[in-house]
Length: 317
Image 1 (cartoon, rainbow, N blue to C red):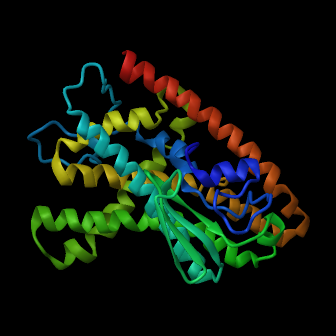
Image 2: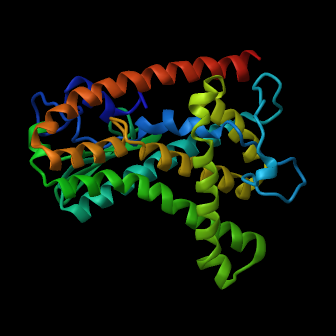
């Protein structure tokens, strides 16, 4: 979220350091940054905890869903488990951004920069028109289209921009299918159904259960959780090995997909809605920037709220 270079650029109008486009710009609709969605992705994790050790049950089984009460203060989990979960969060955001990058290729949108990680560039290389950057903070990445300003981006056909916006959520929807297939093979061996049929059914089942918990974000705001809570709960999953990590990655990836698709700026779903409104009347394009800034303010407020709640539950408590 706030550590993402692209969101900072969107809010300030400044190009990333080292960008060759130079100058000042307003790329509110032009930059894809899935780090923005970690706040939203945190909302749906509150009712899932890892199964007790020794039980052969999936973490997403309905019988295992209950409010989490994991506490850092009382936890005996090794610190490396929490570091592993933090890196997993970054990996899932990076996969989201890779989805946007592939979508940009499909839509024919030129990309100026794709960053793996955040912060000053450790190294970079050029491939085609795109500069690929490796940065020191491994918490995701960002995609920067090769446009001079917001107006330049809005000149791109609406259909191309919709494809670009949907690429990230689609990547987060497809990843659980791959993880379920791998988990099925590890648990039951190689079968045609376990590889090609059950993963889709399993993904749809978990997706539906997570959608059903979405109203709780409004009806039970005191149960919302953020990065601190995710890391605390994820530490429990990490103790169950690769299968536990895969289970946690499935839920978190689907969280990112669901909440990125909400029709709220500056989320991907909000960008799609704005593109569709442009088809109704071109003047709606003027709302991209002010709505994106408003959305960022709301997301930052939500981030601070969930962080305070998480510290009270998992650190102080």
